Image (cartoon, rainbow, N blue to C red; front, side, top):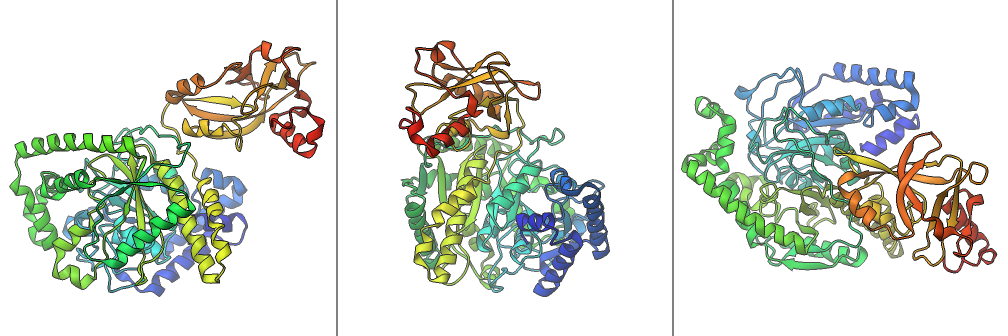
Length: 627
């Protein structure tokens, strides 16, 4: 039950949406975890949805997968997220209402072909990190039912971990999209604030909330994010977040100088072992960072005036239906009475100063790696000590949204007691793809190493690094929400070539491989490092179509990209075989003159074909050694 697994099965004709729905319903019955769900879509409605998708497939064939990138994929949503025609309870039945429209993100998933199975349990009003604060029951851990599943998005995480759905939506204010992921061996993707619209979400702290994604692997979560990351003009907190490009070199990684595990040696050992594996196989170098300023930010969330934002979200309901609110939740939200308007402003001033510390920190590192959770308590222990143990679980999560950072929880190797464990990657707003690319490497590394260890094949573990690189290559830029232009590249910037990193660094997205119009000539330039071709315009009789790639480049990063283009190359306008004109690499005529040493390679029809000929017959060309 994974996104890519289902899509591959559909495309190969091995599975139908009806069969996928039937399997999902059977799985829900088999695991016997009624506390996971607050409301399930009737089976008849699910089968009708599946049949409608099958009819589309019969009519459109494989084209349906382009129209619906999540065709037939079962999913669930946390029950503080609206679904048209279904009650939204936020785990408090007297609070329930039935919306006429689905949340913006849910509607985009349905439009992408996904099949909603139901709404999942949560810590009431999304207040908690444990998954026990619900009148619908404590959501038990997917594999070890005596342990907490994590909250507040408890049901959403367990629905995925138990194989009932391929992905689910949660929400994350203080770690609710990351803690349950860490506990259940899942990926928990917490996007940059504003990247995903929260219209149609019951707010906890509206200024800090974001919809999050649970999935079995990073690629699945990224596919889902690619569908829901869309600016929504009707959501005052929606933003067109400028995406940061990939890093050329290995990221500078920070790790807290003083780590806290509250005496949980299994958690401490798992994190230490994970770091050792990452530094060995991914060649990551880590540096200690002062975690105290981030702890100070965390204190503002529940011990500062931001708790009043939770109180504001409930309005008069907090007073008129106080008896319907979980006692622990009521106690947490009730702390709002301790703060006044002056405290709210003073809190903002304190946060502004602490943000300066965070900005300085991320000038010295690119990514912060922390344990997703410092410990994993039993349900019984949490019920006996609900506030303190809950607070412990937010040690590495609470500060993230207050500082406008993005985060990604990734499973690693299990603890010595068999419970899942993982790390969380944290970076500035807009670095979502950087985290996903590194997260995919990390997950593939541990997955392959685990399989090799099970097979007793130690040599195979070394291949995990190659698998990590392949997994990272699947993480493509999100759809652009900013001005872009199309750039044609012809040589060293092509995929797999030595300067392609400059496009990746600029945040560019590959569009297609195509050709120029007839009438271009291509030369292998002399004395360039790395070796480069030069494209020049000629007559149709002299030239021919030349193979190129088209890339979509954010306009904000195009200036720097052009500034880095060395003479004799430049950026001009190229005519494509389609008749359209785009910006692209051109060459000064003097660099391809008879006495320049440049070699006419037009007959090869493109740079890659020319390089392939050199490998096949290196003695045939005097430039072969240089290339």
